[in-house]
Length: 561
Image (cartoon, rainbow, N blue to C red; front, side, top):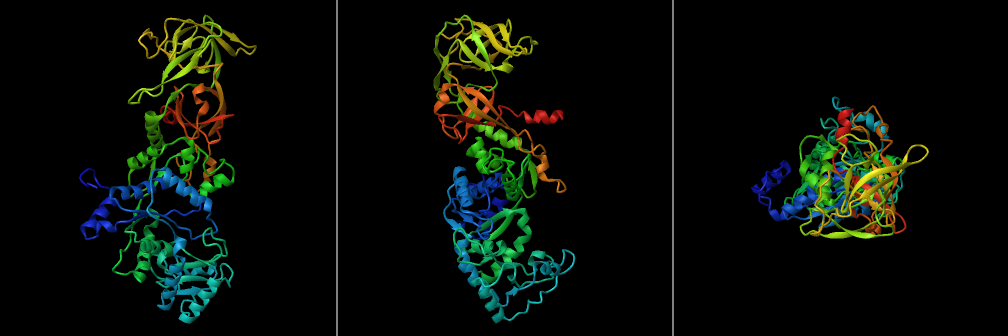
């Protein structure tokens, strides 16, 4: 990486400084260490882009390591989902690792700690431990079991491993300093008893390492050079280093933990615990519900890997936590889809339009461009007939001069087709318009050929032929939360801000070219927004999700409130 090509963020500056101070470039190795206890969310996407992006920039390997130290909450489903998300974002890992790969190493080191007087088995209850821990302003007090003999600690720890004790009866603690100003250094827990089935090691272990004990040692075993994590782990760095001090071999790479700020996203929650609540309490349909902030939810909604990577690069890395407006993410999505999404015609709120002077039974196949952003323009054919659907909002019997769509007595162009003129309407007994009658100018056809009409009118509207239209379920998504920071007020349950109108399901009609669409195909429904084929879609029933509008309409709504 040429450091002159761009200004370096503080993470890159740390790496560059280490390289200047003698760290060999071939010793660089990074990692992304998710816990397999839920699906990854947009916050993880930023961390993925950071670590794997550093791997690309420095041509260094990146490990994908699952921190699977809590079998009570972890499942193979989450492992598979995480791997799928990382791959979908466009990244490849060098080694697939698991903390459980190192359970024996960690246990052996724990035995060494005990023998060296650096760890002991504590038999207090959790309530007793909490009392003796102290507070940030008052020192803790020693456990009554802190001075157990090495032999007694070894014997108890072995029996813990063998499954002789119930959960909560004993733990293994590091022996550091109960008066330390950093409360994490006050004899932290290294192991607890859990009689739970592990998704990889089955029932082999009855004791499981705590995160602080397993994480740094896993980094060390994998020879990770730089261990990047979010700011809440800053107080843990001292403990990370203390654990490494006990085992470090100067001939090996010593991992360095450094922290960056979370980039919280407005109108979302990025806590796996809260996301799990949304799923379990049926506020959403699943982890990949398109309203969720999970990577799988964003994928299903129609967000693209390139858009998410661009979003992560745009917001960058910082030392202070801040709230990023979700409209920036939506802008990145819109910008990418504009380049790649074919333009097609769909009508979501239909009203019948009859061209009274068009030949009965006639079908013309008009030429329509797929995407004006293409380097080499491609086209498709769309059928045109006497009876069409148009959007109900595209017609008014009487309108002011700023309404450039169809009215009685005025002309508009049908996209890719003819100019029509509104003549009359048919209404039902409630006064609702059921049909719009118009005439067309036979010589006004648009298209790409030299014979195409150049006659200009102020408005153009989209349409679909009723005879050829395919009915489709269309899911219109709004933001899941009405408040920009739904979990920012600790006194109010974040679920109080759930938007009751976050999903509207309607039946629309799409042009016949979409009959063979596949899951995750992207489209721009002309004049309506960007849409994506849902995984529920089939040949018998097409289903589309609205990905994002053609412009940011939410900002206008908020400014009026």
